[in-house]
Image (cartoon, rainbow, N blue to C red):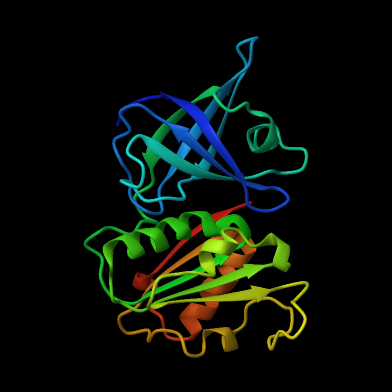
Length: 235
């Protein structure tokens, strides 16, 4: 694997009040798999360095030497608030990657897909959805996306126009929109009713640690085998 590469910020897109999509140009980027991430290194004028990991939101091939990262600004954080709002467009950072070989979806993977994401955990899952759309796969695909409130949905416009064969269900944990048939609350076993069958479905779960553990337990109880469940957590 190549070491640190220079990455120039070319675009910043607001997703939520604290969530941003950052697009970087990375010369000679080798490509990556949906679900992988990179390490980002910042170096201050006095030589102090900080490194954080961020998921790749778009599949390789979508932009050649461009990569798209999802950054959730953390209150009091050392790196994420700066990346989210203060790093000037045109400025450079360093990235190492792609990293990760477990929480990935390869072009050879086939069969129904069940994606479960909590908050900004939708970022690597979005790479999988976009890769599926690019491949014109006919396999069933469902995204269960848990957020606290409607204004915390990442990629809202894109998720409203997903490809044929993809279902997106938003699960609100604190504030549900007026008229919502599902009351606000954490994901439950009832939310898994009507999902692709356990026998041949691959499941990917990403989000905060407590969310991922709870969702994983629900999947196991519903009959999805441990060998078909892949998880990635943060926080």
